[in-house]
Length: 77
Image (tube, rainbow, N blue to C red; front, side, top):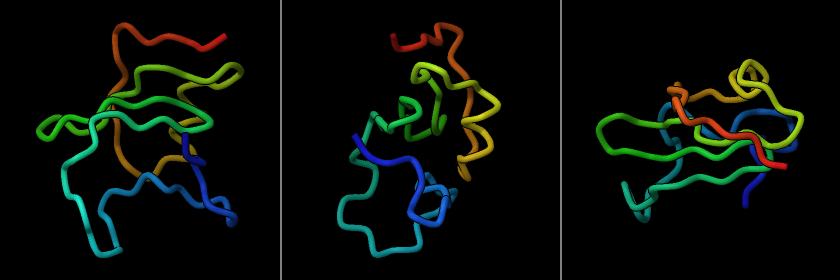
């Protein structure tokens, strides 16, 4: 699991990576302390699970990258 934001509160889930890539397009699931996203090379990110106490709107506020919301969205207990 990774932190969703850095120490300054900035999103770690970016629209485009600004660092050198060592493994492009090798991730299919991102798990953070706020949410879980599936990753599709063509569709991009899809929110599939929220951490307890989180909302879709709250996750959108702290996520730079665009994402869709799964019809089967779940909330962790």
